[in-house]
Length: 473
Figure (cartoon, rainbow, N blue to C red):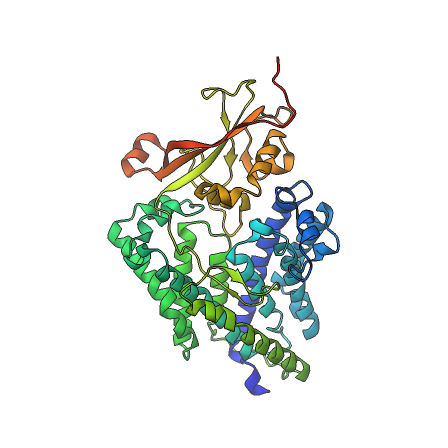
């Protein structure tokens, strides 16, 4: 079966697998540290309620068998341990079938989390990790050379990821077509990074160059992935460079890093492959059967890409085997932020002693410079960005968040950077106000030291207290 494998890509596979295991590790660590507060028994959207009303066939998950905070934590920390073992090369110490089963473990565990994660896990990079992670199961270990068909399917994912994102931009906001979207995007993106202020302050002509380069990378370069080498490797390198630019300009969870991991699988390295026996017949049959099935499933994302009503980040099956991707089909021109405040006052006056809650990543204090968190994902911070766009995005969970703040719930407070109240003294009232945020100019930064300037817009949620509580006399 010499036609079946590509010996020149054995080091590419090694790099890809170790890097993918690293992304898995970050994803499971995110779940381990945030799952209880977001989806636990007292979470903002409890997973137990979800599995009680949604059948297994619609959302396959281990949590249909048992759903408790301890079990969820065990799954997340097990995922961390297995991912770390894979990053260290544990699959290479096992027989081929054992290595495949080991790669199947994090995929099944993460699928279980995503399928009960509701709005907290409704991001494109969740499905992307599952789609890539499923293919990794069939990439083999040191006992066989990498299968050509699996390497091709990894390129197919990368093509759909980039080309789909390019199409959604061209069909969406007019600012992508007139090359002005990046006049706003660095300022209005969900979670700016430490360099976003500087990217925003680049000259307008350079922003247009950025946008044009993005179109070339997403609409032209993807086709070169299927060209002969070294053209395909050059195309992958261009994508890596673009993704590193995005890494520097903002916090997009592990989306950019996973795209880089996919691009690394395209590049053959000038290292002689160690001799290995030919692929066993059972392995070839399994790989070809799975690959044929995935190619068949690909017709749905292809039809979506060709459609004038193209949608972003959609899974077409409950196992997230083949998905469609895309981001920022429209770009906000103005940044709004929801600011949560609490008070100990018995009567919540407008000018009372209101104290602001500080989030880890989302803008708050105008003098606090944005931090770098990606590839770690601050899920509540991201959803607060959506809440500022429209209260409809927060309808399921925002009221529970306010209730947990009124209770000084320790799990919820761990999601924040700082609570303004002692652990034994919860606030009497919590309110939310909407502000417009903009990056300061160079002059304002020098004079005030603040990277943001904010202006009050309106009340988002009036002063609220726990039901059944009374004013103190």
